[in-house]
Image 1 (spheres, rainbow, N blue to C red):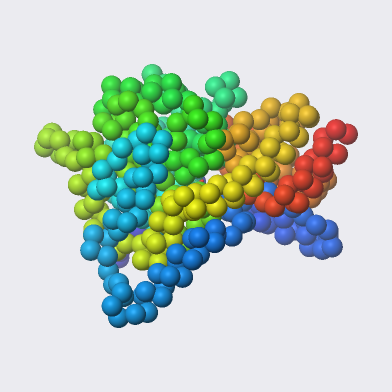
Image 2: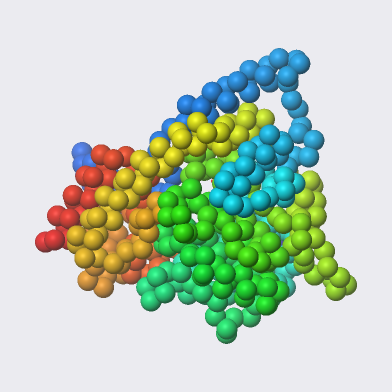
Amino acid sequence: MAKMNPGFLNLKKSYLFIEIGRRVKEYMTAHPDNRVIRMGIGDVTQPLAPVVVEAMKKAADEMGVKETFRGYEDSGLGYDFLREAIAGYYKSYGVELPLDEILVSDGAKSDCGNIGDIFSADNSVIVTDPAYPVYVDSNVMGGREVQYVNSTEENGFAAMPDENMQAGGLIYLCSPNNPTGSVYTKEQLKVWVDYAIKTKSIIIFDAAYEAFISDPDLPRSIFEIEGARKCAVEICSLSKTAGFTGTRCGYTIVPKELMIEAPDGTEMSVHQLWTRRQGSKFNGVSYPVQRAAEAVFTPEGLKQTRETIAYYMQNAKVMADTFDELGIKYTGGKNSPYIWFKCPDGMDSWTFFDKLLNEAEIVGTPGEGFGKNGDGWFRLTAFGTHENTTEAMARIKALLKK
Ligand code: PLP
């Protein structure tokens, strides 16, 4: 009989959103006329920017004409027009990238999961706790054990290297962070980069929320940090930057000088391995989507997409002001679309979930779903509408001021 991948037996049950859905459904069945406000899911709500839609339509038209029709893209790793647009964006804040180090994909989740293919099963893996679940799940599926480094209230939910960890393999970092909204400073990332170089580790840096950073002193890319080209890969996405959650486009940056150990002890290029992996298992992103993505990085595209981000960040401000007023501790809300706050009165995160649902009719995400350090903490997102966010904050004030 065919045999299953035993790694799947070690996956934790992904009950978080199922359990949230079950409790919300139960509540709504009992109260069908009430208005429940959902602030739990990390999907965006605002439409694509007009300039992006125009570019996609124009490209779709080209696909319907013999002379401009396109089939498979040669490399499957991104048209030069998009790579140039991405390189230009990085250059605007001081990071120079050769075009062939930018590898276009259908999103950051796939790349975060797929990159595990190029690493041996016996690598050590370090993940911050709490974290976006794909880092843990994809490594467990690949038969790798995961060690956790703690993000806690004491360190502002910005975990730093821990000398007790077994290093020398992979390190997953995400900044601005989902779920905690914390953002690493350049100094903190430099500590991680030095640690990775010292321990011969590779950092997989998830920059999916870089576009939400408005503080010019905070790093948007790990490649702003000296030494990172020797020890890091960066994975990014247009999902939150430009509302591409349903359009699908992301990219991974792999420096040519980044090396990994081959079984015979020689050095092998990570770039070569990743392009080989993608060449074997991936056939590229559609032409209209790549044209749409290119439009994001034009001056008009940046203007329009940043207006949408400003809209979400206005929600984040309303939320942060509410928690400031209530004297509740939180991270995020600035330079991030997530607010991660401490459940009041020492409540665990599921008890608070029920209280918020039953007494204020608001749905959020219990922190525990992202790792053990998330217990007692709660995530709300700024991706809703102004109306819902303002209404939800008024309800939270009424509930918690009681
Ligand atoms: N990385 C992080 C930290 C995320 O929060 C998300 C989506 O919520 C992703 C990656 C997924 O991005 P994509 O839609 O490009 O797969």
